[in-house]
Image (cartoon, rainbow, N blue to C red; front, side, top):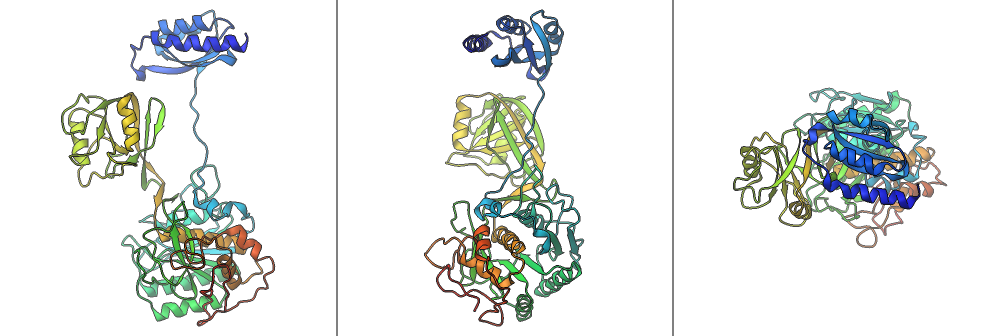
Length: 528
């Protein structure tokens, strides 16, 4: 059979779909691949239609077609003399992982982390979910319990697990990858935050000491400390502890703060600590990122996808007529999956023929909760609410309890669905990944880069690594160093190249041994 004839077969067979009797509900149909004898495809397609089945796809190059059949029709098709065999059209699933936008942005994918086992990253945060599929580090993760916060390997508010995933999410074909993804980085977890989400300066100083003890116990020479935390008041004891840590060869990195003002946040604003601002995927500073004369580097901190404790998050999936539609779970939606026809319910204020169907509802006039409850009271099994202004709809049901899943979609997708209603699959399910915003998310990008660069240049000092990170940062915003971006976006590979001739000099710094790079033109910082 020539390609032209096969194309004609495909066209003829697909044209015949309008003749198919769809008397059986979708739930009664099963998918099969039918291999037919050369030249008999049209006849087999007619048999499928006569059996109240449906041709889903023609595989013309292989004399085969994918069909949906009611169960009673299978045996007859198998005995059709023109059919060579019938087999299940088995499902295939994505076996992949996501590379968050921040990883290539900071050049983490350009530098090997094969040598990362020579470096320790100490994360002072809210804990760590070691059962997470992306945080299995083969025993390279240890921790220290802090009085009153519980075990370091638990995480009640997800923050520490999210930070850890950005630094060291494993490359394992699922989930996300971190800056150092090969599972050989040494991590030490200090849990200073419990469920209440706050700690004292004294607790932070004690955590620093625990990090130093872990470095000694594990016989590692290099350590980078991640502190995605802070407060508005300085503390002399705390400052002295971090000055001493820098003098001892430790690199401490902290979040600049999320108040969107020009106030200093501590410990980030101590001279001995690198202060990190947050930028988005377009390399624009986040509106919440604090802008001060202590900001040193920038990292991706808006819409950062990373790990959270297993099943602690939720996600939504919406498919209509086989096509995926971007959606956002309504805050407060129950965890549930449904399938059914879409029905246009206007703004969801009046009754509509929703029984057994998924309501398509326009935003406006009444609350999202009322829209979902009205759909539910009319027998609806799910609700899709589309925006009445440009962009994705992110909504909440507040304190209202509903029993059907609900999601928001964009205005354009809503208009398209309204013009062509079809069959939808809607699911709100638990998840162990989430998007977070904050300088807390920017900080682990910089910490990961610092550890990556240092592990590849183990003879360099902490002061030399710090200077290289600043001198090779991508200049953003106003030319030269500025209070919004600092020296700019941290870049792993460029910093690595800059350290080719390092001497191991400790440098020191201009205030108390802190080593904060000078506030001169960006690209030319010094450690004195």
